[in-house]
Length: 607
Image (cartoon, rainbow, N blue to C red; front, side, top):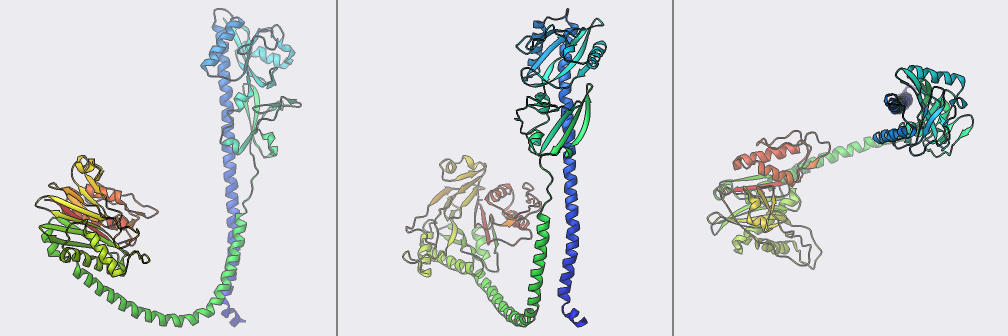
């Protein structure tokens, strides 16, 4: 038995993990459900307190309105007539921007209606001359006499008015010269009070119940008691339109001017326990069972494969070393064909060349030559990087040299055509055969330092010219260049491929000729710098003028906009300092990520 247990110890361990997982998931699920329930109760309590606050606020506003009417009666030279009181109330309602229905009555000390009116109708219910005792019992009459004696406010139960809306009456006792003269009794629509509780957010999830001490339930459109009172069931937010058990409401009783109102708040929908955790639990069991089966089967396969893998690894390691040695040698060959450093320093003494291959060998390359007292400079980006790109770069470099020295072509716009012909011949890319997408992008310029002239042509790779106030130059105004800010102009390259013949008709490259000025700085480059992905920390260029965003969650490209801003920011630096800044900036941007592509940037200052 012990041997059996030892043999199947991994499977037994998985069974134990299944049992432990079941216990852990049970307690986790219970804890999550309990927390969700607590959060739901807290939200309900907060909404309940907001509803109570709104009720208090609405009634207080009604009391302010009532007090204003009472003050007008109290301090007028004589008790106002019905018309005077109606005009004052309409003026008061206009100032308060109150638009809902209202009925105002003034009742004397004998509880006889002296006047009653709405906004526009006098005596709408034919109450003038009648007694309040028809509507109020002895206890309520005593309460009305008390508020006249003490100049207090009293709120009565809601009732249904003749014009068809449920109202609530606020009674306010009035004295003139210390002697009671009666009380004013405005009645407003309950809708005005209850509407303030509902809003666009809470009506989606919550319902409210408002009950008076006599058992009236009321909403914005109806009042409910022992018998139906004007209930058309139009209020979709009202709780009776939902299957909500009254026992799930949380209640609070508030007293406003001697009227007790019981406020209840509940969710429209009952709490539903999430079935996600149950499904997750079963899914977890299923995954572990399947995993156990696969593990058991793979145990027997693994040992057999290990021997084969070890042998294959040794063979791969040997071949890998041979390949790496070959690539390192290829790099030495590639470096040997590039322009010598002495030539670059002689022809371009005030320049920078930032060259950063992605791999050991590069698909980007630069070319410098001299012809007829002009310096020709190119920055090229061949298809791919690594070994394929290196092969293309050697071919591209050779064809550039052949165009200049073998065919005597020195104009930048004509050289790409000669390279195209050479690539077509070498790669067999004639227009009748299937397309091979091998080629290169290039920025090629010729600089006449004596006559301060620049000629440029490009295939996908533009040229940047940094000059103070270049935005006002003729080249920008005429549309030959596009300005970026005040001091950088971009001369666009042609979107014509070199070597990758995608069109049946080969187009000619545009010849750009630019007059140079002292302290101009020219930049040509491949797309490697702008396309570098990074997740940078806080990065400041050595100029101290450029900050990068910190702690980006998702890697993003450096992009040409940021590249242009950087070039503008470092114009007060020497070309050697610019070289260091460009190198440090892209390294900081890249961080721990891999280099995306080969990088070549050439900068030349005219001095």
